[in-house]
Length: 332
Length: 276
Image 1 (cartoon, rainbow over the protein chains, first blue to last red):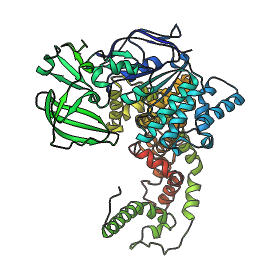
Image 2 (cartoon, chains in turn yellow, red):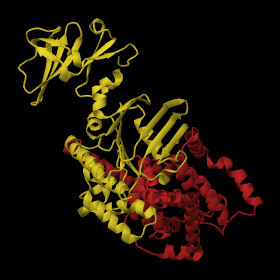
Image 3 (cartoon, each protein chain N blue to C red):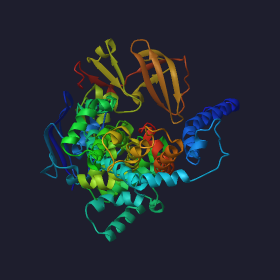
């Protein structure tokens, strides 16, 4: 079981308030991703749940039990750190066995559990090695193995993939998702990468300046962003946000159009512009168009598109996929 | 990428390094050579470098006149004793400063270091009188305590820099894995800190072994270590260079041998954790 509830949780470091107040419900078995730009408080929030930092005020409940003042070890959570935080003086076997040894479990059971975890994570041949002799991906697996053997009520991941190269990151992302499917344990995952958030999460929590901007499934956030921040943060490439007279026409302070929804034409449309940079990805083409009235607009078109730098185009915002925001940044 | 050094410059550096090294080593070598000469040859002009009658008579006489082993034992007790006592005090101090620093931690560290800038002779009178009142003149107890206090700032500083190098994440991981404070220290912190503690210990044994000011001023005979043993050969009746050299050679031999075998740890200790 791993249902976690945060009630009016705040955190200040001296005079500086990092988290001004967060309420959040995480259901048992959910894969929740905390996402936001660096410095938004997502790691601090995770560390508060872990018990590595003390809350300034508020309550944290794990499975209904008040865990606010509990020591990290007593909370039954396991954490995977960005730096892996393996014990450098211990072999892979001893690293994975460490939490079991601390729990006072007998050697035979430890051996069986460590070997089972190693088999799941393809680490069987490396059990005698020290962390220093492993590659980044293998180290990350050892860190995950150390978390799995404890059979925690929830896993906490603090940017676990940011030290890996791009190809490995995609692989590990899949492995962690598969792990979640097979274990069905609650996972809380912190990242600044919205692609990781979109691909892995059941529920995304978007954080900004220590506040929750929006909570929802990946597609809810993509389709119905609650405000300008979430609209700009979720989606790749970023949503085009346009202010001024062009937005006024739609009775809004800001309008947003996702690059994949911009309608392009070489004959005519609402805004005229000139192609600046064209990025050809094979499957897609990203066109950065300098439009006269609304500034630079990014458009994403499927496949190869015959436009080049300097070509004139017309852009039209689609009426049914236009996002409107008020002066306070909230969706209208 | 390694910087490319032109071969000629490399040669010049090699020659220079050897020259500096030999210049520094020469007095030690000369002392050792002189210890095997007769008193007459020791003061001969021009001095003989290698071609003289090698003799062990100085060593025999030095051992007969003053008991080398007793002095050596005192040196061992003082240097090892003060270092172990220092570590006992400094490990918890450095641990708390490295892992739960307060706003004043840096100030305390600087203040401790500043005590090393005071000339020792400045506090000779009070410390001498205190030892006298407590009946601890010429006593190993007072020397162990005083040398421990003298080297404590260095021990704390060295351990502090070593402990700072241990990533906080690893200690937090241990906490998440269910380790209590004592288990965290036994299973995680100590094994990672052992190399640092070892080099701190070595360096401080050497510092205490070579310490001459307090050992000379606070001892007469009973507690006199090897420093006093050497000093007793620079007598007012005239210098006996060969015997003084033999005494010096005997005094530095143990620490030289120890230093030779622990070079690696010492270099690491002397760079104060600057090289990661």
